[in-house]
Amino acid sequence: MSERLLDTLFLLAVGTVTWAALRFAAGPVDVTWSDILISAFLAVFILDRFMRRDSSIPPAAATLACFMLVFLTVYLWGYFGLQSQGALAYWTKGVTAWLAHALFLVLGTAYVIRRGAGLYARTVRWFLGGIVICAAYGVVQLAVKVAAGINLDSIVVGTLTFGTGKVNGINVYGQVSGSENIYRINALTGDPNHLGVILCVPLLGLLPVYLADRDGRRRLGLLLAFLFAVQVLTLSRSAALGDVVGLAVLLPFIHGVLPRARTMALSFAGVAAAFLALYTTSHFVRTVVDARTQTGGTGTDVHLGFYQLVPPALDPNPVFGMGFNTFADFYQYVTGRADFGPHSFWIATLVETGMAGLCVYLVYFAYLMLSALALSRSAVPYASQLGGGLVAALAGTAAANFFYLTMQFPYFFVVAVIVVAGVALYVPARQRAPQRGAPAPASTLAA
Image (cartoon, rainbow, N blue to C red; front, side):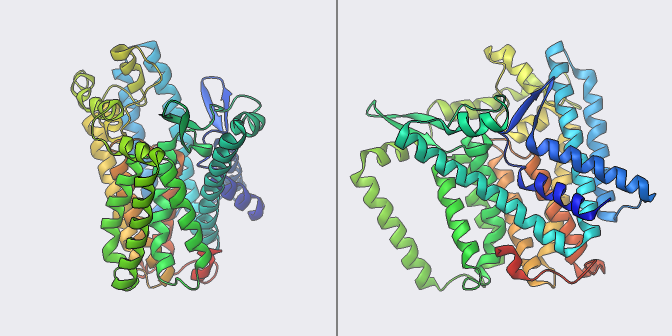
């Protein structure tokens, strides 16, 4: 098989992994464009290895495979906790989708390690590029809606999915004075909170890369500024929590490359003054800020209320839970709504997979964190910068997922590929020189 074909399928899958709105209804399981590309890559990769009679796998990928097998064991055991046909349907759908993404994690990591530093750098760029395209679509989505009242999703998403995608349009949070709509950008993710939390990864992950050479990576700096502006327009409090936690974790990695204290103070003062001017002069801005910073309200009560559902949901099967991906079925009996998940990744993991599943995931997450820490100690400058950013990105995403759930989405599997493959390629302590060529220069990340 051609390496070019495998590279293309892999990078296209990585680039579209956040475009969840591009979804097709395919029987019991909906699939996205990224799912199709992931499946194609897996099929070609396995066929290529079969034709070459090559069953070798790097140790890092083998470690991930062991984790995925343990997860699968827990999920299969959870089958015995299913209590209805609806739960069985949810469980089947969840396990089927998870299997494809788990295979992509293991085989994608093995492929990147084998292909070396060149493909690794391209993977980071394509992942960033896909998120930037998603965010740019969100800005156009907002502009078209405000200027012409047109639902861009019905044109773009509807066309690309033959009418089966998520074409709800931009999220309307509420109104000011009964006439001005408050919009929250959701772009190609389909949900503003999903988009906001996803943006924590490039913002935190690549900030150290930019700060290490601000003059040489101006394009990267502009991209990060653009992504932050889009994140603000999502009005996501979960994303804000992720940013705060991530920045706190990131500070030890970037304290040496931060601008001078005077420069930072002047910059923050300018931003604060501009915000204060907007807040005091614009009734619209003041209403939006007040609504998103209040601690009470329906939205907050819904998120916190899910934690109260943990004991009754976990009670029948505390060890292995009620079944992977079945919380929505349980929630339907509580409120009558079948379309709501737990609004927290950690609640979902505990309730659906029990104490066993939560413990396994905590060990897996610790492995990812330790891997990112190892990458931050790489002798290759951009790899160490990226490693420090990934430590913060993982911490910020985990914090944001206390009140939303994106860590079960395909993009987080790609983050894991970047973390684990980076360690295998760039950490001197493991005596592994990057394969098939020298490490890619730092400037490639900003290309």
